[in-house]
Image (cartoon, rainbow, N blue to C red; front, side):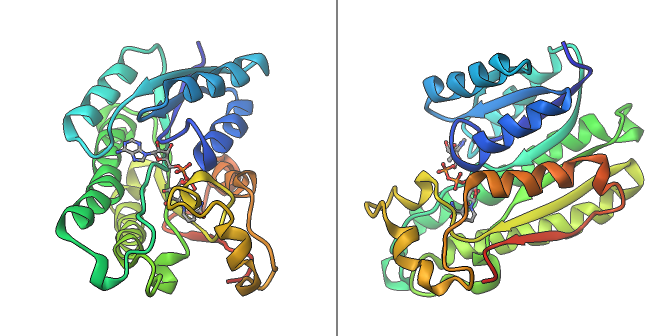
Length: 249
Ligand code: NAD
């Protein structure tokens, strides 16, 4: 077993899976967290092991506090220290104009994206902070270009949740800086993943790519590169920062 453990939430597919695979090359034990699709998570684990890495899959619903506590309890049973967390799990509902919004949907988005991120940060800090016997660590929160752009007429509830994540990144980075924990964020633009197809429009990225200065959507691997850099010692003096990965948007 590797000495250091990295948890990537929502790692069975998309940006999370790309991050897990890339990070696995760094001599870490990777926790491929998943929500519903165990088979997909195990495929990511198999890929990592086939490439001489170390990984396992753990299930949890990030919108449920009890599930998050259980996820971290399971990590505690592994031989090694948690030193990296990527808060990647997130949801959006397409076409949620202000008139289409309702309290149930807003709660779901905020519970998963904001409360889930905060509670995962809480559990990770308890394990990473020097004052609690940890070795320090690094956290990356996956935000969105929507936090800057607002997603008007599309999903302002989701944009607001990502704005909250940006604020969490800033506040937590200051709170834990002396504990040898760095906290940064990435803000992807339109990336080719299933989150853009779940609303029933699989070619959404291509339809909107004319609005992107680089005239193309991004690949999950391009986001993963930035996340892995922010987690690495190469970014040792970087905290409270955001990297925009949106093709110039
Ligand atoms: P995705 O839908 O493939 O990934 C989202 C992941 O979150 C999935 O693995 C899903 O299982 C997990 N998840 C959702 N609800 C969960 C819950 N309640 N409990 C546990 N896990 C849950 O899409 P993606 O694009 O890879 O998204 C990853 C992150 O990137 C998300 O936070 C998303 O908001 C962000 N993002 C994506 C884009 C894009 O264009 N793809 C742009 C900006 C930001």
